[in-house]
Image: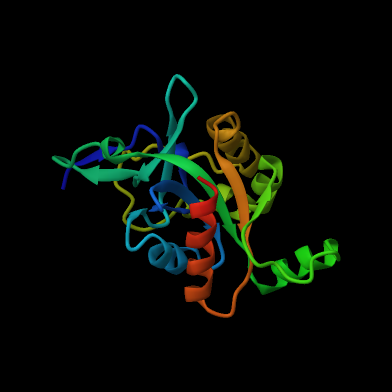
Length: 191
């Protein structure tokens, strides 16, 4: 099989992209895919391979892209959507730490907007994750991906820092359905 290699291999991060209430969202963290699927009513754009790009005005976009695609398949950038929200799904321990650091909160009953730098710091795993270099079935000629964690973080920041994207953490809930409702309800109010 012949392949076309991505022109953007370093723009691909371990996240999901979906539209929730018409707003493009990049989602990282614990339980991201199932909650995103429910909250977006199956309006999923990318699972696990979120490719970010920006235009000359600094607008951030996202789409699904792999490092290689079969010849004859259109460039997936044609399917990109504007990203309006970054969501970081917290696990149970992370949610408790957030409550411990903010004793005035008895509970977290919605999304918590956080500064961009705090979002990046909380998402280093998703930003720096890459498949192993010796991953089986790598097509010959596949471009090398930057594997240095600090360089990947810098590249993510270069792509996204000055965009108009808002950053949120999503607290732990007992069920993924509760988390999906929490997200969907919050993003109606955040338009």
